[in-house]
Length: 67
Image (cartoon, rainbow, N blue to C red; front, side):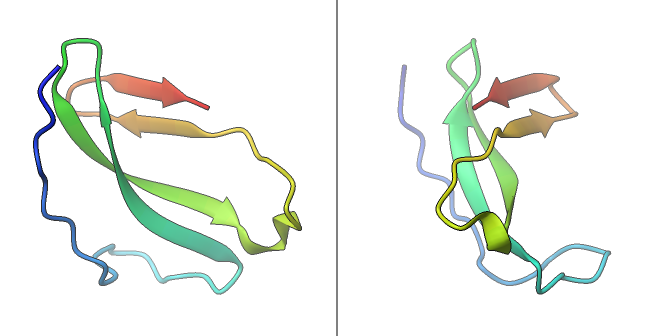
């Protein structure tokens, strides 16, 4: 699997407003074909150190990463 470097921006680039109740960050992961994909990860700010289940999806290639 080749690690491809992707340049991700930290600025808000969505069409919906940013919520102050949610943390947002951009991540990368590899799909089953070894292609590096970029995704947005959202987590509640009030999790209090608890782990949360994650579901990350890239609709164009139908790749899903479950946490």
